[in-house]
Length: 420
Image (cartoon, rainbow, N blue to C red; front, top):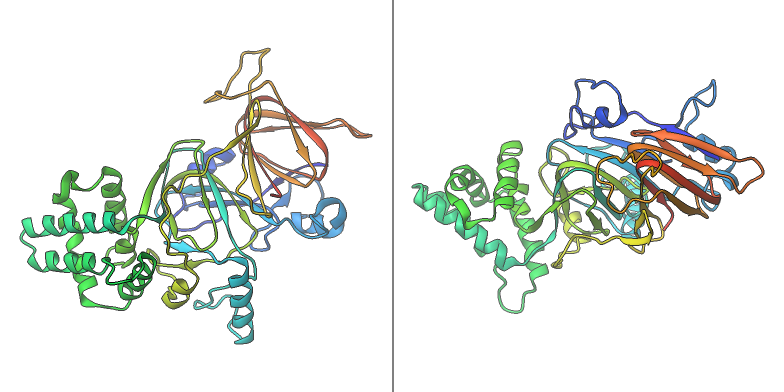
């Protein structure tokens, strides 16, 4: 079955005022719209569009005929999202499967309400995720070498000294010294200890954060331009938040459209700006490490965190056929495909038509969730008793039940999420 689905964007404070409305072809609400969820996650299940007189969610569809519409008789193990990032998100990390199961069980046993501020685990599932940029996207992702972090902190300390802020200079030097391993101490241990110290209320942390705006104005090219821009944004949106200092430990990644990040469980990250498609395991477990007014449980964060250095956060795609690429990080829950199509008869193309094909065939041994991000595409499943056809324009989404392959034609771009 080819079934149109839709949802109402979630209105988080970090969302864009107009990006999702522009994609969906709707009027802006005047409020930030951050995420469009397309899946069976109970936090915001997608709805079957214009199909029944009584509203029906994708959960209802699966529960009504789990063998036909579900995965192994249950809900989708993945969640597809479109993100419109108008302001930096919190620094965050997601648990692996064992950590999530243990943490959820412990909080259930302790009687902590699911909606309590101090709750860490909303479910028992892990949450690896993969993000592909639609526009330029800036992110903090994965720990970089401590030597590079100390270099930037000492450049900021020198700028504070030049500006006449001796206390700020001393505080920033203290922060840098906290990131120098001693004896046989590993860099991972240094990072964990730094996180614990940064959120412990030490006056030196507050002095370093106070010194940052002046230091930033004078540091110049001693710090890379992308890092300066990220610090400026974080200082403006989260003044006095220890997460601003924590951000220095992470890579700055600037993704061009079509580039991807894979974030396995336990990897610290934050998205800073841009529009993207994201697929993840169907979970909403988040432990935060600053840049937020929400609960920060530093002890639990440090317990589940992978504090090892990551040389390169970007994740490459694999070409499956002309017009079709895939990001397949090797998790069982999901993979993400992108099809680009060009209409050879009308010479019509939409945006970047590089790598496009006149026709793409996609296998569907498991359900697919599709979102069209450019142009107009035709989806057909003809190798069945009753042929099915759907034409979807930019901003529309489809659920495709498991079965025979689907054929894609038209002129545009679409993303397809399915089981890994």
